[in-house]
Figure 1 (cartoon, rainbow, N blue to C red):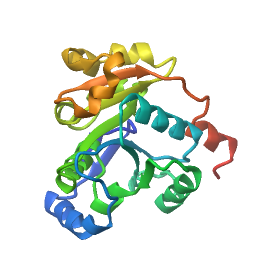
Figure 2: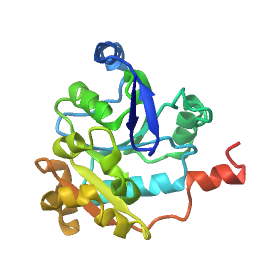
Figure 3: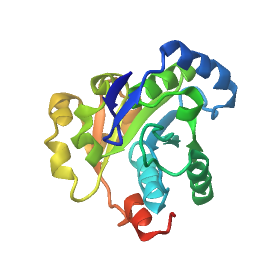
Figure 4: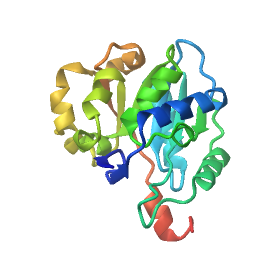
Length: 226
């Protein structure tokens, strides 16, 4: 059993073997979202605990700025070894679907269906399941700042275009991050952000976007997501 760091910044302990994951992929292949060949789909992963208007906002910005055909939310399962995990997956997925009314934003629980927990493993599975689709990994600048701590972070950068959406306050630390420095030569300027989905990897793009002043943490603290 291993301890790894992923997009929530927490250590995760899992020991699931690759054969089990492959069997799960085969079982759920016909129940996954449809994607046409050559589409460019942005993947926004997170706990969405709870989903809110800020998630919608960055999804719309990603559609516009990176020239995406679709954005899929990957609502992640909880960590069973954590004493206090997120709300049940079914509740978070239902809340996200009730919130989102955009025809090009789709809510998914793909990670639970195929049995992956780390971003790199999820992306590897997605590329096997959708070999003719172009995926773009979407994340905030706060995640870029500690991206080098993620499991297989270099594989992600080497194989999947990455779109970074920066809000005020996160930009400096992200620009000075280890990942940004290591992959500086492959950064696409913001004015060419629409090229990201069709760029050869490694490729990443950093764009500044206005952010809504709302967070899942604040909503939970207020008791509105009890």
